[in-house]
Amino acid sequence: DSGVTQTPKHLITATGQRVTLRCSPRSGDLSVYWYQQSLDQGLQFLIQYYNGEERAKGNILERFSAQQFPDLHSELNLSSLELGDSALYFCASSLLAGPSYEQYFGPGTRLTVT
Amino acid sequence: KNEVEQSPQNLTAQEGEFITINCSYSVGISALHWLQQHPGGGIVSLFMLSSGKKKHGRLIATINIQEKHSSLHITASHPRDSAVYICAVRWLLGNQFYFGTGTSLTVIP
Image 1 (cartoon, rainbow over the protein chains, first blue to last red):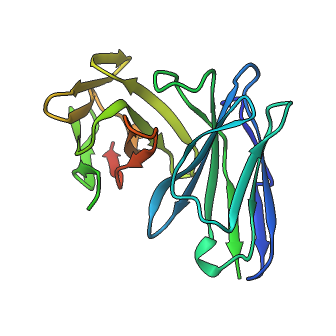
Image 2: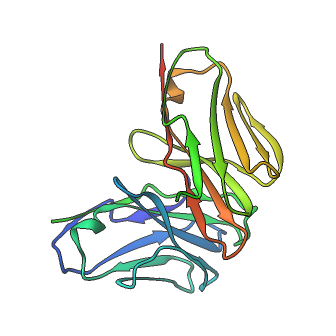
Image 3: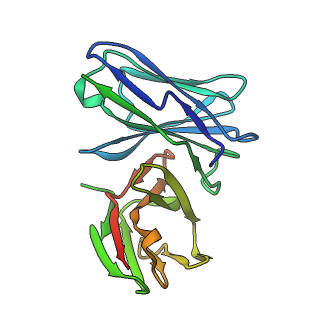
């Protein structure tokens, strides 16, 4: 158990809908990362937050947004969902934001868009 | 163009064999990560490297910054090592992460 929690574990929704994925980092970790893993694209980095501020941005679509709250939990919002958004979404956390800090991964949320 | 290339894509080994997985990258990096993903989907970070070599138990990871290459070695492989191993690099400019497509390892008893 990494100490990172993600909810929900599974989510099935229809095209055009909006969903929110939630991540609670390990106790004491200030940085949160979001990743998407799909069958055709593999793992992709979406976005990183550190202590409430956006720190780095990857291949995050405009239909997606994220934030990190004062209690350090983070939410990833996906809107106008398309079939291609079906994927595993992972959250990871690290103590600080720099590259030398190990990341701890949550169990993931499996999103199915029908 | 993929910034991170891994080889081999698939690997089958007999229990006890020495295994090497390779990762080459094309961008300047601040760190390289080796990740392990089990059949159930969970991801575990094995190593974070910015130079040299690290060892945890039967796992050894090395990186050569000049050659933009890293290797993950598993000594005395065991069936429980069966998983997908993924190389990820953190780009020096912009802090973006790039991932390899993974190496699927099966260790046969």
